[in-house]
Image (cartoon, rainbow, N blue to C red; front, top):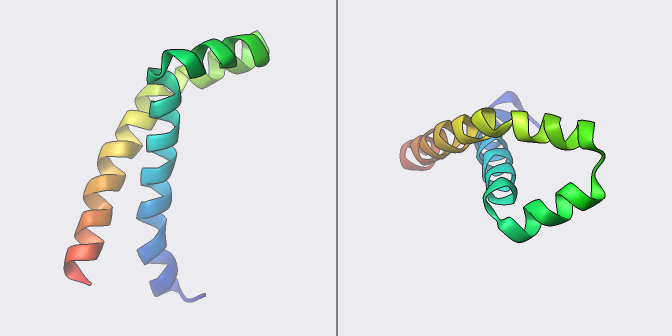
Length: 71
């Protein structure tokens, strides 16, 4: 894998992280399951990542669209 390929794929990874974490935190059923299954410390850490996830979602989306548009 070259740097060019990695540079093309990385924005999609950032977008995917933001999308997955945001969807989990916004879906009441998934929140309920996470509260039951995860230890309280891990759940608190997961909730603390809400801002990072939203930021990754927005920046990853724009960055991915830019890569697609310029490719």
